[in-house]
Image (tube, rainbow, N blue to C red; front, top):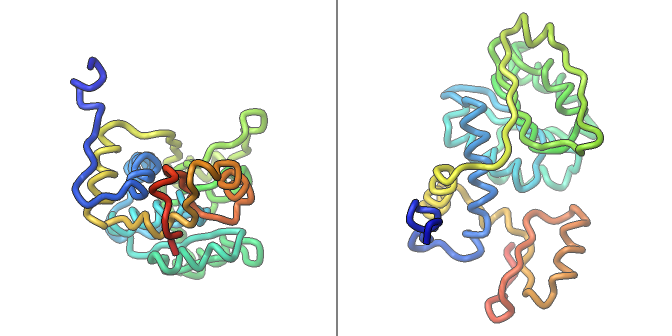
Length: 230
């Protein structure tokens, strides 16, 4: 009860399915990252990674007033989902230089915000040079603990007045915001769930997730497992 009284139990808003509720926690983390990135009306935002987290960041950037959202991803098939969810520009990073494309899209100025929604050291290193003066970068995706050191151009950070931040997790406040965003359909999490498995197929679900071809893989009770999303 000591955990319940302060409000740590959040009732599901009316109309929210259990499948959608499974995405409240990751969306809460994204809400935290979105706040720290300080996205403002009219900003050009670049999101590196078009996995589930990147697609949540994409939707929140749009809600925060970004005038243009660019999504870069090395797995070309994922870029279609980004386009469907509102990305203005998608960049196949395996075939195209994101820096050149960002310069083209911004008239050489650079972007206002970069969010690295992936665990890639080169993305963290390179994105500093994509930013316009007074730009912000949020390192949202962490790196392996035994390989987490990245060389950054500190002169670029210094002379361009850049803000570099990183976040992990989200607060109870962020959780409640995420629940409201999902209930109001302002953030579409159903499109991010690609596979639903009953608990009896847990091993198969983990195999699917480890292939990194799916988006979000959700487990639910056998009696509730039904149609596959999308």
